[in-house]
Length: 186
Image 1 (cartoon, rainbow, N blue to C red):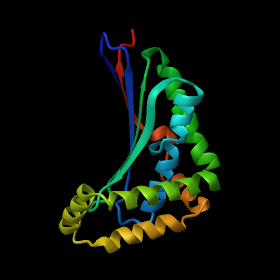
Image 2: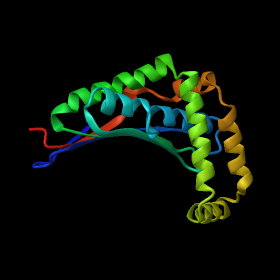
Image 3: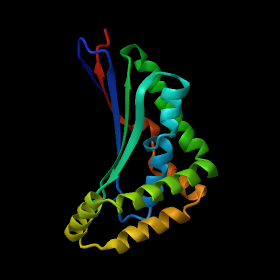
Image 4: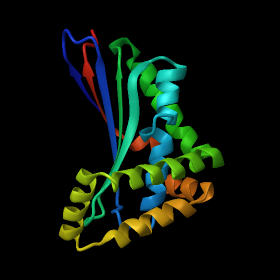
């Protein structure tokens, strides 16, 4: 844990990271993308609902999952912006939500919402000139075509809650995050 005291700042920031041996060609990749959507990357994610909506502790909270295309080097990053006095409560909220995700898993409704939302986002990104151009450059660099995207879309579309939950439990270790905090904690 790294803690940085930054005087005269009204807000504090938390970031946590855990790495996994996964790349975007891994069979587990689509399930991890769906799990991240439910956990923290959507507007109705568990972390947002808990830390912002329910507990009112954070101005923003969530997660970001990224996996490389070549090396098996993926990371789940957690973040929150909050009043420095709420550090212990924010950390407890993260710990409880991560433990609940591993222990109880995600519901059919949550996974269904994630599948629909992710597929809509992926389709919309392919409809914008900027997204198409970036994808074509990335495909040329990686030696891929749109068929790779179609494979990921199909995998996301057929995921079940049991598959998403088993994959998340395989990788997510709530006590293994490296955390850093910055703020005026005096």
